[in-house]
Length: 454
Image 1 (tube, rainbow, N blue to C red):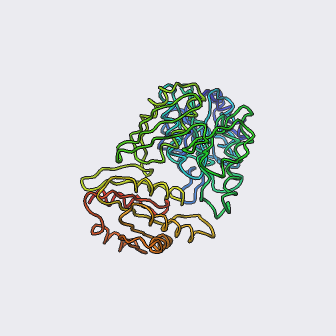
Image 2: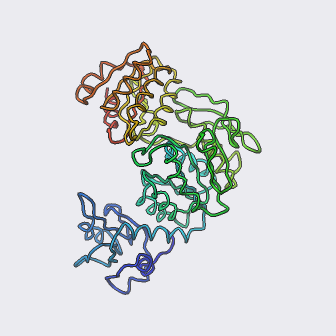
Image 3: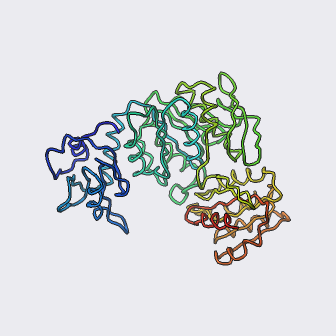
């Protein structure tokens, strides 16, 4: 990471330093909150959790090589530490300070659906020419963003920061730290409606990022989304997607099963031929956004196409797993009506003896959650999907919507997991293409693991 002394850290977070004065001019090597991630000269963050108190692991962190800690109380007999009122607030202050030291472009990725995929596509596109730091795992919240910022080093040429929220005000706090030069907005969708109310609320909450960007910043918005097409950003704005009016448009999209997706991206200057080694027709639209970012940062069309060819999906997000008996699409990291619809359309386009959708509850949809689940069932009735298997209380409304569609196909609903797992082996057949998707809290990764063993 960039040089950051313990003296500077103490001043930035407004804490009281306890320890050897000789260490104050030493620089830290990393910032970690897990003592198992400590390396020589790490700064260890002591967080008080609901079940675990990080202060209890300070001694272990020092034994592993930590040079200093940030804590909310005196660490008797431990190493050097900075005492603050709130470790989380201290981390945010430190992240914002570190962002001021950076001289590289920071790309923020926001939206209700497809943020992680977009982040990965942008990083792949830029990676043909640049050394890119990208958000790791799910570190996209008020603790993850500053930790990501603090992991940017002198070796990096660009950073791609995923920014996730669930309520008003959160995006403002994230943007105050990240202050992205470019923001890519994937979609306004039905997520976190319990807090945000409706789609207009979703847009307002996520659009909090724009006033905190530099005036020469660029907003890259999905122009296929009616809410985003008319959004006021106060910035130079580019649009991507598949519709004709977009500045960056994906067209001639074809898929070779789950092996690849080919398409062209029409840019303001020329056409880029792209081939992804991944499943999902929606990837073409998102790739158009990644092409826009690549052009903004000076990459050639050939470099962008070469970078995108290295894209690989990550676990839980349209990750295709070929087993001896099935083509398994692991998309169970999270779900809302928009991402569900996208995944189901991609499943519908697959060439397979049978297409099977195993779906579960979608969370945090607010007062209209039953209707949103039912509407998804109606959609499935119009798609080329052979078997629908629903698991969960709210997933019953997907099942009922499918029945209401009058589609004459196999359909099952299980309110209880035990009955589901007992009958699942008899419901799927060798050669099936199987989509597994639900909100993260439904633990559908257990279903993926179960099917992989069949």
